[in-house]
Image (cartoon, rainbow, N blue to C red):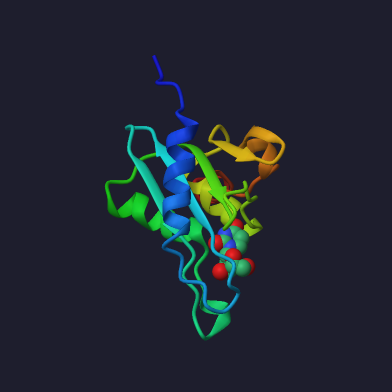
Length: 135
Ligand code: THU
């Protein structure tokens, strides 16, 4: 049986990551945490750059940590702002979450917990590529 999701643990991990954010330009700190299918909790914070466009979103660093610490599939994700409030991942980061969690990964949103299939409808993914390249 699949373990229940401990949202409190995810919120605390996201808050802790948010406190490590490097956001001197926007001064908008972001933290995110994800529960992996093997029970690990991975997290990330935004890391900005003087060349603004090179800034990394918190979800980018979380996904890097996911891959670096053994990979796996994201089951649940919670992203927060500096006040600890739930933040919706930007469009690019929804695509990152889809790649590593798929349509059933659950996202905590201001409107409750939603599957990625509702957060990123009609997503582009590897299946669109193989549909052509495997022909
Ligand atoms: N940011 C994230 O880290 N994740 C998001 O999903 C939205 C935006 C960061 C990027 C930038 O460092 C700051 O928030 C302001 O846009």
